[in-house]
Image (cartoon, rainbow, N blue to C red; front, side, top):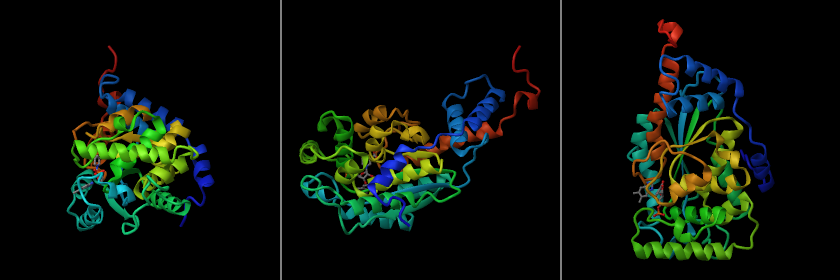
Length: 338
Ligand SMILES: O=C(O)c1ccc[n+]([C@@H]2O[C@H](COP(=O)([O-])O)[C@@H](O)[C@H]2O)c1
Ligand SMILES: Cc1cc2nc[nH]c2cc1C
């Protein structure tokens, strides 16, 4: 099934973002105020519970059907030496995900999430974006739709992640195009390149920005020209999740960069999203500021594959455990004001 049949359909969906359920938010807030604790004493946990209530449309949200969707893609510009690893690692890691041996397998199990791995044409890298758009329209629409397809009815929460050797360079290009600043402000070590590698990444982003400078600055064109299949898939998943009012937990720098072109046109696109963590990739904290997202964790992680978002699930589950499991003052017979 094709969710996004044209760039116009994609942009139209972005122009009609549903809102959270105000009644559920009010009821969840009232429940928080009735629980046996000083008002506000559970800090962010209270906000997370109310946030989930609003998007699930119920005063007492649950995460029974939680899914981590990991999208994988390969990039044509890797020929310029921008990663510490060869592009073949993308497919090898997809094999590892399928065999159950990657960090995200362990973390998704610990977080109580199903894991769906979507490999997107790994033997057909995108075009080198320093000399051509990364994808043609059909390729970009197909990647957006592959992302949307993971949002099955009945999902309580979606974690998005990615795997794609070279994609920290694409993420830097998307951020620089969306928010300005110099490429050097958005480029970082990724998998671990040295200073020369960083200089090569900066030069590649500069060339890409110059090549596409005159192109339309719509979300679709920016994703198509400077993104990648796994990045467009994350954008499609986040947009479809919004249509179905499914809350999303974003992962690191690359996952969040997928949202940057959308947020320029529709800043409310992040309203149903939590930032699971702040990655060690230096551009991430800058990007989260632009997206107006406050990360739940900051553990120095920079793995990708949804790992930071999966770790954040323990905080999100703690928010729901208290919201749903605590007694109210009335139930416990504890006076709530003296
Ligand atoms: O999530 C992050 O913030 C993050 C930061 C650095 C690297 N990564 C992962 O590493 C890969 C991209 O790094 P690179 O050096 O190949 O551009 C890709 O597979 C990402 O999942 C992910
Ligand atoms: C081994 C490896 C695992 C990864 N997981 C996400 N990105 C990755 C990059 C590499 C190189």
